Amino acid sequence: RYSYDPYRLTEIVSGYLSFNDQMRFLDRTAFNYPKIAKVRIVGYSSENRPIKLIKIGYPSSTGRSKPIIWIDAGIHAREWISYSVALYFIQQLTENPKYNDTLKYVDFVIVPNVNPDGYEWSRTKERLWRKTRSQNYNSKCKGVDANRNYPWHFDELGVSKDPCSEVYPGTYARSEPEVSALVNQIMSQRRDIKIYVALHSYGQQILYPWGHRKGAYPPDVADLISVAYKMSDAIRRQDGAYYRVVNGGDGLYPASGASDDWAKSAGVKYSFTIELSPDNLIEDYERFILSESQINRVCTGVLPALDVLIDTTKENF
Ligand code: 0X9
Ligand code: ZN
Image 1 (cartoon, protein in one colour):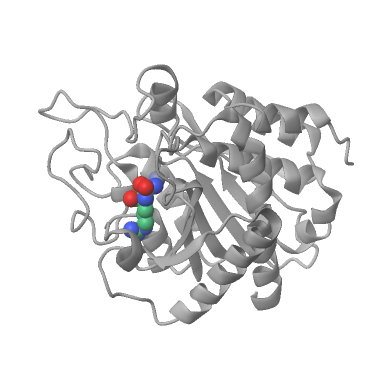
Image 2: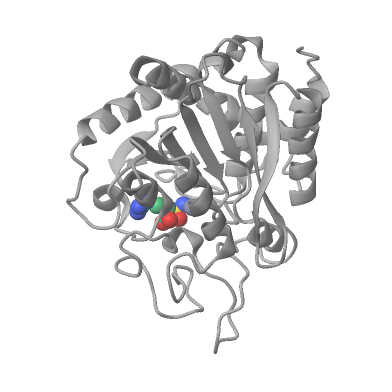
């Protein structure tokens, strides 16, 4: 079934794709690998673009439900490398024979673009756009920081009341249709989702909950830290890049209403935000504006983290 097509790989690691091309890639994956890949629309953005997920895995042979690893990307529009990594994971899971056996035991649900309106705005109008593109009542400024819009300690820390701010959380949790779609989807599968990962950039960090304030940790935080270090070690062995393991609230800055915290609160045992390359310690670097020549290296560099998540799932669930 592996009609391995080198062009597919080249397409996603040699440049940043438009939203339409990202979706074409998803649809072609489902078309090429109908036994293992299914695409579903879970909602629509404010500007009516589809929010699509792809489910990758063989149907359960035991009749029992399979554990799910959930990965979403690009809730922040300018963090372009996150879309590339999500597409690369999809390509690897479907075309790299080493994952064939895994697909019998684990299902992957990947949402490669959570914020299509923001991304298209970033791609064509304002490169550093972060938020959604929804209309704010009583303001000329558009958009909400969707990673402040989740129903977990909504509107507490790391937010601003100003609709023009980069971290405006919206008027109420789940006001953004993109967030609402993901919350509904995750809620409906929450018993089976064992791992949640949100892909962001930049900083080379693996963040674990809680992140809504300083000094707050879930009771099983040691388990999360241990998996986070395994991911960090695996990336370093593969690529040499050092991803620091830090608590969302202590290490970065407290920010409430984020997806990782909400997923953890919904019962997903392992929940992380991964801040991809570049490293935030390197000054005078392109930061959000990572050149296309770097895509391949970042994608192959973090693939070992996916292997750690797979092993964790097989060992624990
Ligand atoms: O601020 C964010 O939303 C994330 N960083 S980014 O630079 N990509 O914007 C970090 C979110 C970490 N998670 C929590 N604070 N819960
Ligand atoms: Zn981000």
